[in-house]
Image 1 (cartoon, helix red, strand yellow):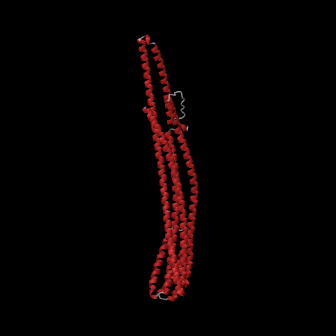
Image 2 (cartoon, one colour):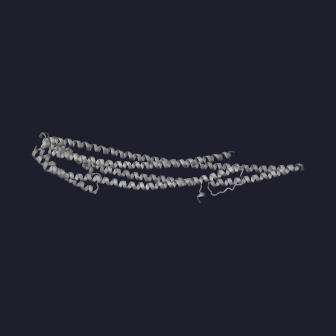
Length: 464
């Protein structure tokens, strides 16, 4: 059944299947990359940015506390400038908090955010605002009592809620990472199985296609060589009805025609021999034998013309087969180009992941600088003695928050680094697919070279 399928149909069918395999691998790779990109985007947009916003809010709140503490120990005439700085910091913190609330929040995150907002309102209404009012009235004692009795306890209560929000960001980021890892491992297993099966299927199809084309053609070349050597007694078996089968059938017809021609030549030779022995019988008998010989020679010439036409037809068929193989080589080369484009896409995603790592490095640097500022503030508070005790508490909290921010940035940097490593592994898999496509192109080109040699041989015989 398959032997009767024409070579053109075999080639079209084979390369359609190969194209489907390549498109399937490409589609699977694209879906995997899209899922990985969405996971990274979610971690950045909903977790990393949120961490920066929460850190910014807490830094501004603590900065305001430091300013209030400084105002209580500074010249009362400078209280207005300190109060203006606190107002600006509070407005900036409210702006950042509004931006954070406008992002996507989980249900648990929404509850914690609402609790923080309520505690911050209590902190402002019962602590910071009354302390600022006392400073405006230059009542330093009242401001100090409010600062130590209200501002500090309310700040610690609010800070506990902020710590819970930051920890939630880390937990959700970790969950996103674990889900991404699970998807990647599952995709890796299925992709490996699919690629192996595709490679085996493509190899089997290539072997079948090469054998179905090369074996009949080699058999036809062997028959043609035997005919050229004068062996007209060989049996020619035509086992298919494709182009190769048509070639064998044409060789069979040519062989039968040559047998008939040789038989006619032998008959003519016998006739000439008999005529030579009877030359003495007279010119009339010689004339009759000469006419018979001329008729036989005309039949021989006609048979030779048929043989030449058959050989030319065979050469044209071989040339057409060669063109089909060259077209197949072009299709395989285009498949290799598609795999190359997929490698470029993987590289672009890897570059984006590295840019995220750079951003995390900037956050880590900011946390480091905040830690240094907190240390300097603690030193200044120690120098201030008893009056700087509240300032020292704030400086200690700033330092702790900076250290936790640096730790969180480091963990996220490690997560992004792992994602970059996985993207590199995906790039390596795509590179291997490209190598496989190059091998397929090389195999098809080798078949094209064989067909070119066959076409050239047929053309030479037709010209002869």
